[in-house]
Length: 150
Image (cartoon, rainbow, N blue to C red; front, side, top):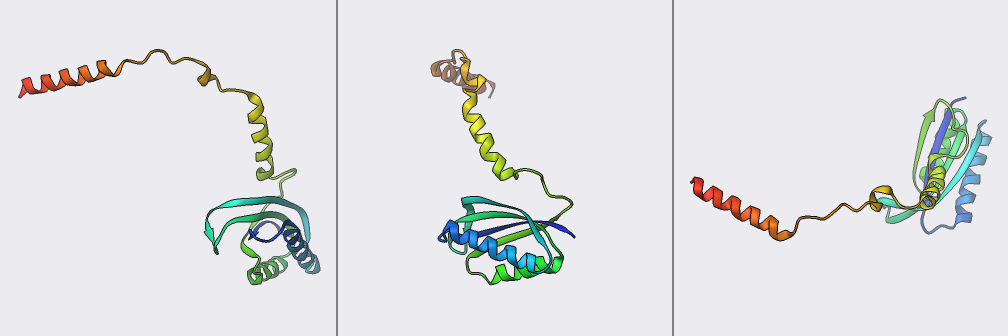
């Protein structure tokens, strides 16, 4: 059977339990039509890049699906009818990723960066900078040179 990665966005004003209920509804729909859900990840409530159906935030959920096309098409049809789902995207893939997705790994990376300490280029003094007066003297002398040439 073909493999799919499916991400859907639920409205910001639904609770996490309602999002889990949506996941279970779509899981049962896929399983009734002869497929299975390999993995489900709840990414949390995140800000959107722009307003979507008057929402500034959304609950993100990833589902790795192993199902026939008809099952996925029916799930997408049901999502289009749902008032709680504001966007969804299904992509056919050759194989599913093992382990956590990139969105889940990103939070691990953020924690590691905070433990690393200061960056090296911030530790070094860049030396004395020329005073502003010497800069204005150079521009005044270049203006004098230009007036002499005309």
